[in-house]
Image: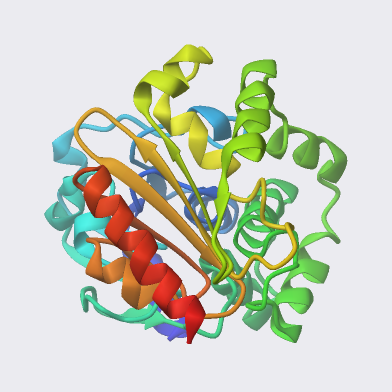
Length: 309
């Protein structure tokens, strides 16, 4: 599969790389890491990364603004997007050839080839394996920094159960490059005073059920009262993750026309529950969307039932 993708990369002069909406470090890390790996080894190629910007992660990479015409005769690669509806920038279908690289459970088949490895901790780990399979390639410190960001983000600093020996082998290869890891961690986990205040509110007001389900509801009015936007709440999903007796938890954050549910688990698999509520993801980390607070209560009830089994 790796050789097939490399052959396609060699065949095209223009390569456009997409990823999922509302990007996390793995989405940006795999997208930017692959783009940088290609640029470093094929400097004559035109390589672009597209999608909406993520304000809190702008220190990782900036997106390119390109015209529709750039897609003519272009190879399009989508990283870290399990379903087509979650791909950022709908122009991904305008290229000549489409490739998918992802580590989520396969629920929407698209792209040829379709490289899906659910055993990988992250899509960034998969991109790193391209270099590991072809050590003759150049791996720059910038590519390594981006791919390391993806590994760190999707493994919770190598704490989650998705970490394998392959994850550590990939990480060991990446940290051989002299990027500033201290600066990276400082920027990744930096919080504004406003975010710290909201974090304190969440810790004071989250609920914990007898089944071990934790949850917090953040209305848009509440978030705005802290001088923040609903998107800022995503960084708080794990702020009460280490509370004893906690099995699974969900952070609800109200946006303009919907309520985002960020679901995490230590025990029961939650990705099927997320799919029931218009979402998806991994067995231990998923996202969903509910229409109103009544549906949010239903999701909590379903999560309680999962944890009670």
